[in-house]
Image (cartoon, rainbow, N blue to C red; front, side, top):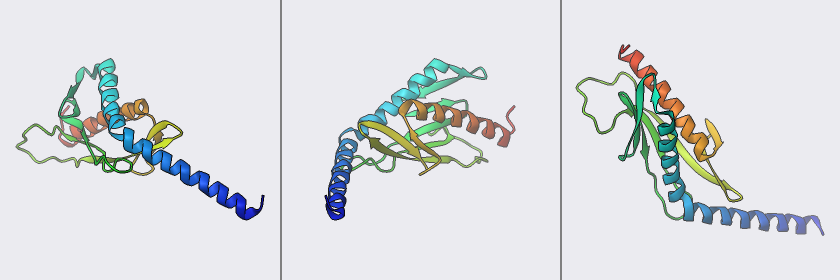
Length: 158
């Protein structure tokens, strides 16, 4: 086989793999997003409490820890991979506040990819790469605890 034939064969296989991955993401992206939320809820329920304060799931959907939450903001699901899925760490979105938040919200932009038939997430392009749903759920909870600690320091709540 000539170099040109090898190149064309390799290219054809790569294009077929890319098309297959795009089809899987389109067909299953919304379900994987819902599964991430369910996995986060289940993991939080197993942990139960942090520093005596409950991790509480709300159907909005967000995971609450005291004054703050990790809010799941859906993206667009349609042709191709899901776009714009985010987790926002900030104040509880359904609460009303009379003071100014001294700590800016943190936004995780999520990207879903597939290798073979295994789905995995990346956060902010390369902050977290290749995480399964359970791995990302655990990281969401870790970051929520860190955000709560920073919020308490910024608002002097000890």
